[in-house]
Length: 386
Ligand code: MG
Ligand code: ZN
Image (tube, rainbow, N blue to C red):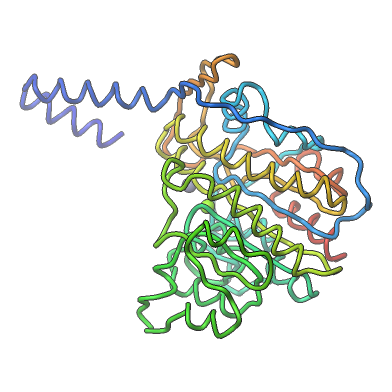
């Protein structure tokens, strides 16, 4: 806003038509980003609603960062009226407010889901007094379950970090990377290589991971061939690129992590969190193209989770967001072409409730309006019994 005002003042002051022309073209380019023209749709399968168990042995928890109802709907239109998420027949809403702000960030939002506490914006796995709180991933690990994290951002970024690290501030990336070594997490796949090597403290965390028995790999074609054991998949220096650059990294990483955790867990079960990180970035950019692309990529990852859960019969899949981004409002669209048009009142996060979709044994618990901390409590009770 301020930037636009400044540009206006500069233009008015200089009175140069050349500058005005440029500003006009920028505005047009901006509008183009606000319309998704439709892409190649993928086939969606609807799976069984009958499950072997009454309580889940495994939980696959998927977070679409910044994913509000409009983001989901934009994906639904973009893929011509079909999403894997539709397999989830139990639907609720999560209230995302943090302890110190009506509008949460991804750190406090992630910590509410991972630790079951309301904390301040920027906090990673710590309470408002900066005291570490056990995450559901750590609690699962303590009970002998296998655990995993998958993300399209750096694995050290706020959302995945909230499940495994305990730091006062979200930007303490090297400290967050070191926290991975304090756990026995079975598999993690995401960016963030730069936080494991070339560090201020001179530690080489890749060497340390190898000493702990991890296969350390950064090539997705090699990563997807791994079937068991411990895997540290670091697929980018910091964040993975946009969809056209990273390809099917997220659905493939999700499928790979599920396979490894299923093989590693024996009869104990597993907990994993998968993040579609960049739905949020599309929201910040007010780009409908970016949002729909990443929403559909995330939905394909949800599809991988549901495919496994349907076959397994003892796996609960929970899909939600940490908050909404952009205040996305769908102002036009076409189910036949996949075109989506949207408007945005903000380049930041908003306070609105976000959807909770669930599939599998225990899914019926996640209905109605709940606090984000309750999503945690319900998952923990179902998986670990407390
Ligand atoms: Mg995130
Ligand atoms: Zn954000």
